[in-house]
Image (tube, rainbow over all chains, first blue to last red; front, side, top):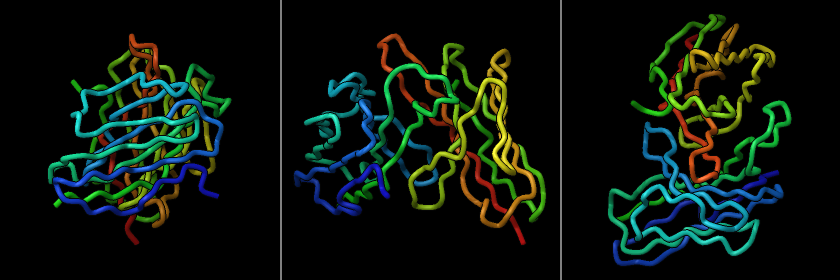
Length: 119
Length: 113
């Protein structure tokens, strides 16, 4: 079963378009994340929501606008993107806070990603 | 200096070989440590969490050295299916109070027949 679901899997948009990426998790997690990954690079953190509040914005340009409507949903609104924004956008979730590794409670679980191409 | 560093490789090894990856982290307040595996054009998937005392899962052994701030992953008896990128991940608690997961650059492994 896919516990973190992202839609759409692929998105092609022009620089003047407005689109959204969606993420839903069914794990009961209270922290959700957006990462951006370019080819042959590691995932790069963009935003963190903890208990539905934005708690980390890693100096992401305002053309990316996150939204967390409830504890299981996370959106990323896209507007006036540039071709260099083309990448794989990964959503992830975890339990916030400090846990012993043995508990498995703080494992970060990813969705399959949305591959974005900006023309 | 990057917060989490790994040798990018690639490591090309024959089937059956033992291979070791290291990862160093700069923030001594880091709390949790993980190894993820990522196949081409797929999402990262948890390989194993790294316990303070070290842990083993089949052919995979993870070790943590807090004093030297490094984590290691040992793969024994490599299989063709182990070919992937291995990402070291550190969960740290910055001043904002919200934990965040930082990825190393990843190490590419190719197991050759």
